[in-house]
Amino acid sequence: MKRMVITGASGYLASLIQLYNKDEFEFIRVSRRDVDYSKPEEVSRYFSSLDFDVLFHTAANATTASCESDPVGTHLVNCDSAIEIAKVCREKGKRMLFISTEQIFNGKGIPGPFGEEEKLCSVTRYGQQKAEVDAWMRSTMDDYVIMRLSWMFGMPLPHIKPSPGIVLNTLKAMRTKTPTLFTVNEKRCMTYAQRLADQFPAICSLPSGAYHFASQNDRCTYDCARLVARKFGYGEKEIDSYILPNNDRYADRFRDFRLDNSKIVSAGIELGTFEDDVDRCLADFGWTH
Ligand SMILES: NC(=O)c1ccc[n+]([C@@H]2O[C@H](COP(=O)([O-])OP(=O)(O)OC[C@H]3O[C@@H](n4cnc5c(N)ncnc54)[C@H](OP(=O)(O)O)[C@@H]3O)[C@@H](O)[C@H]2O)c1
Image 1 (spheres, rainbow, N blue to C red):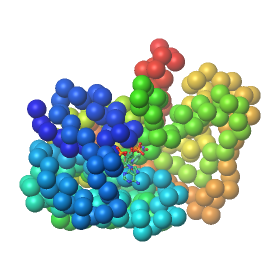
Image 2 (cartoon, protein in one colour; image 1 turned 30 degrees about the horizontal axis):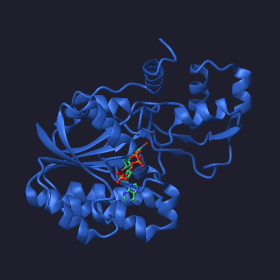
Image 3 (spheres, rainbow, N blue to C red; image 1 turned 90 degrees about the vertical axis):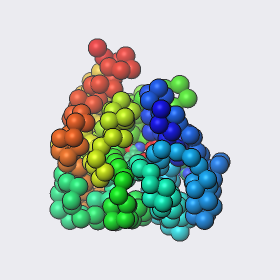
Image 4 (tube, helix red, strand yellow; image 1 turned 90 degrees about the horizontal axis):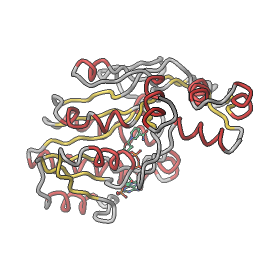
């Protein structure tokens, strides 16, 4: 069995992947309690001392607001440390898997969907930090898989709490009867996180390169939230009360940073549409049949 170092081991996506792949890999869990990602020299020493076949780096401060308020501290964690880990993998001759993001395209002046060859352009610190690692790996490493994920969603499992996503954000608005704004000025892909966990062994074996992992979506974020609410069985009147259009957010520049998934789909990874993914998520958790 392959020994896989997994960083950010207690995070949402890492936890889901470990749960569904425990018979496929021997996971060596690393969390921020083991190593301080704000000290790149310590990071380099720590990972050099580990014995592994493949390394999966998921740890990051993925909160956009934190990256804006602490650009120096989050750069150390999200970028400098990730590059130190990549250098260790390169020196050891081991494959590195890295999670990049759709946000590397959030500053494009043209609409998506974007393919893997598209020039990166981000207007947020989080996107820029991920883009820097993504570009460094592509220009410097021989054996890597970069997964550029869309916004992921899922439902809670025992001991696994999803990071914020469209399904739980919508459900929260409806269940707590809280009028909640969703922007109309944005199109992005949204993908059921279970697709990643289910296909993880195949993703690990992809030819070295960067891949867009995203189910396809033509709706704006507001319409996505309305679709999710309908799928949960809410009526139009209730939906009108709690799912509200945010016409101001990003009104100055419509954001369309959807990802074209044809490269990863041609390599045998199965993805669908946003609606397929919502149906699958709700069926998995017993809401629908
Ligand atoms: N969820 C999405 O929609 C999405 C989309 C695109 C990309 N991504 C990327 O996917 C990865 C996993 O995301 P996720 O949704 O699973 O997020 P998550 O639940 O927040 O997991 C990230 C993990 O990283 C570690 N971490 C967080 N802040 C840290 C900090 N300041 N210093 C050091 N370590 C820190 C923590 O793990 P430990 O406590 O175990 O160290 C945390 O549980 C991230 O790299 C994220 O940028 C996520």
